[in-house]
Image (spheres, one colour):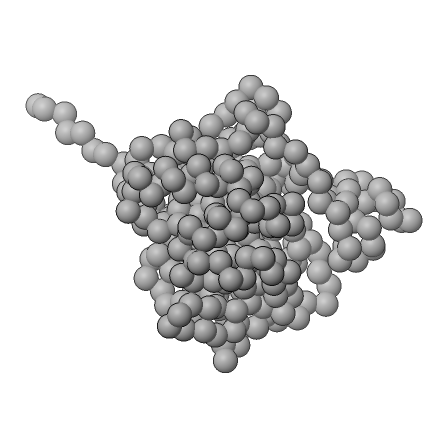
Length: 282
């Protein structure tokens, strides 16, 4: 009997970026506490919440010191995760105040751990959408060029303080379809992306396109445990719902609620869906 070749189907959403250890450092506080070490990185903080709704592809790199089986319980295609013989990237969040609202984030991605176009599996090229989590603008531009030449997918991107004011970052945001922009990044607010999700921190966010604009307000949380990665959580959830057929309003409302849920715990592994979404679209 002739053997039938079955090609793996690409997830509709593929998320590209850093997989890392996130270390919360309390050494600057008067009341000393041991550091907390969680699996994180923007790729993880985006992918895990997204996978609670539909299957999602992950593209990133880890070292042999990270147990990939910790992702097995999630609806994630891990064929884009490579293991290298170097330590997994580490990011440090240093708390300057007891409530963690004033924080310093530091960490370096070694060149061999940066994710580029050659790291995307061929079976992922049928995805409807690719999300580029925070990386150097040069690396994001490389990925955009590759994806435009080799796929029909739409593309989104996010960035951080370190890169937001760089000229190439503006170029990135001019060349994606969906831009996630913190309100402080004024240089990016007039970018050419067709859709902009402008994030206002604990207040919520604004959906903005030529044809539609609406705000989504977030629930105020008094006892914040750890807000690391909340913005990435919002990004991944919104995109995976959108590419799987939900309206912009439902997708963003759900994303804001889940991002709010994420700050009630350390890390992102173990995140669960809130019991119900609050109706706060106006």
